[in-house]
Amino acid sequence: MCGDADSTDGDLQKNLYRDAIGDHSSDLNATMAFSLTPPNGFGHVCTKVCQDVAAAWESPAAEGWIEGVDTLGSSIKTAFSNYKGDVDDAYAEEPENVDVNDPAESWKADWE
Image (cartoon, rainbow, N blue to C red; front, side):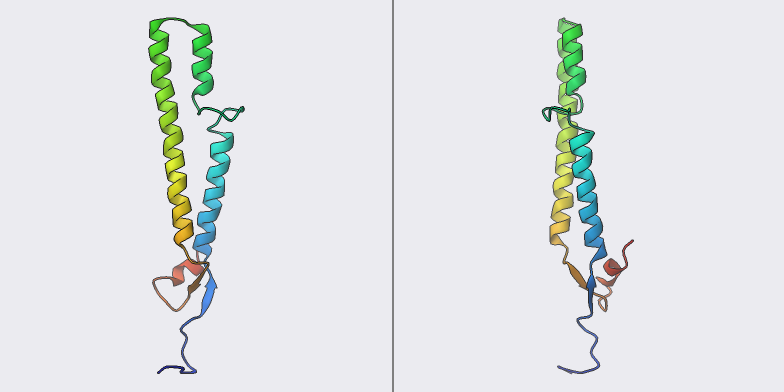
């Protein structure tokens, strides 16, 4: 019945699953900024190695190796950036609160 006083629809609680996704996004930001990026903020996880090899070994073989490692480093950075985008999209799609009486959503209020 509409307006029934015994209705339990609308018992909202904080979406802890959404909070966990947000925490994961923050962790990714830190990983990308401090573990996958050189200190100067430019390049990728392999940039320093490429620079060191270029300075130590001048040859066509070194140039080929550096190009391959540079491509690998760029791919790693792109993969993490794409994953971060997916995590941020998932976070944006989650509501701040969930109805604990809805079995499709209630588990999100108990997320650990």
